[in-house]
Image 1 (cartoon, helix red, strand yellow):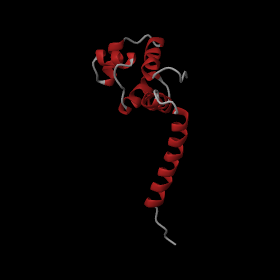
Image 2 (cartoon, rainbow, N blue to C red; image 1 turned 120 degrees about the vertical axis):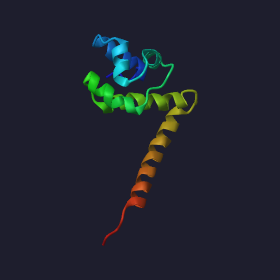
Image 3 (cartoon, rainbow, N blue to C red; image 1 turned 90 degrees about the horizontal axis):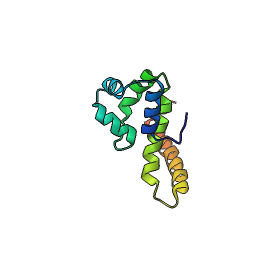
Image 4 (cartoon, rainbow, N blue to C red; image 1 turned 60 degrees about the horizontal axis):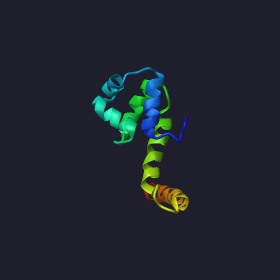
Length: 111
């Protein structure tokens, strides 16, 4: 897996490696071929609902596609910030805090 590629670039590579025409992949996703072309060129975003369909179509793990899709979203959001590495570290800590907070709020002590 080449994590440096954007989601669209990765999707295009998968499609071309399997010699699938854009119209066939678009049909599986129930979108226009022009929309898929825009996704592959980075002019439009894919969505989470596409991941299981693409994973099955290309025989790869949905998790792999998710990593590339969501890392794109994060990268494009902070690409112009000077302190992007610090932002990522704080975000990772914040995610852990929020997960723990939500677990504590949703748990019951039945002792």
